[in-house]
Amino acid sequence: MAFNGAGVRDTARTLKIGINTVIRTLKNSTPTPKRITSSPVAHAVMWRLSANLMSNGPATLALVRV
Image 1 (cartoon, rainbow, N blue to C red):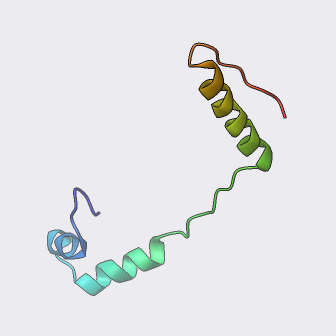
Image 2: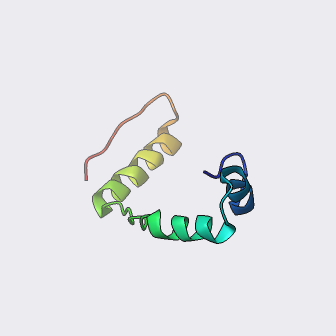
């Protein structure tokens, strides 16, 4: 419900419910974010790609396999 910087009080006032109800609902309904990690291979490919761009210039784009 928070939109364009609207906080808990604005949401509660708009819905005509209590602030504690908004907070409780947000706490109970928000899933925990999953951690996204990249693989070491993808990290190495990214670094090699950026090294190629820096040494050869933007005209030559080569993806090097690890």
